[in-house]
Image 1 (cartoon, rainbow, N blue to C red):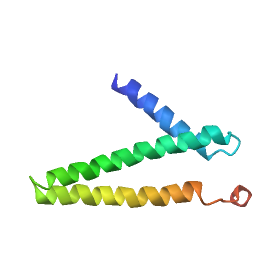
Image 2 (tube, one colour; image 1 turned 90 degrees about the vertical axis):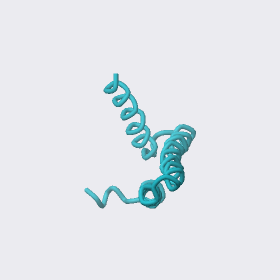
Image 3 (cartoon, rainbow, N blue to C red; image 1 turned 45 degrees about the vertical axis):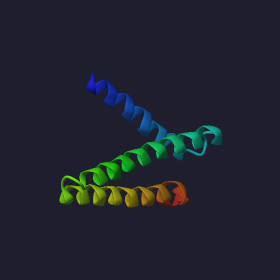
Image 4 (cartoon, rainbow, N blue to C red; image 1 turned 120 degrees about the vertical axis):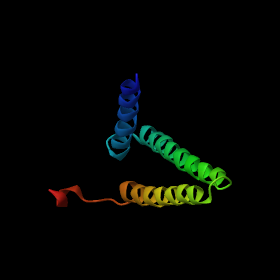
Length: 95
């Protein structure tokens, strides 16, 4: 059962990311996909921050580690998002 969920989620997210990069797909399909995928990643990073803040009461070192991991993931996801969606690379130059 675990493999089925993993396959479905991988298909949805990887397919959604690839479709959102394709300019041949209409904008009214691409933009909601970008929003849904971004909201999912924001929710995961927010959950890591939340767990970090809650664990500060019990174990200070673990809470700081969770917050640093969340901060690292937030920074790296912003960089990846900007690189993927805002920078237009001429694909003819890559070939």
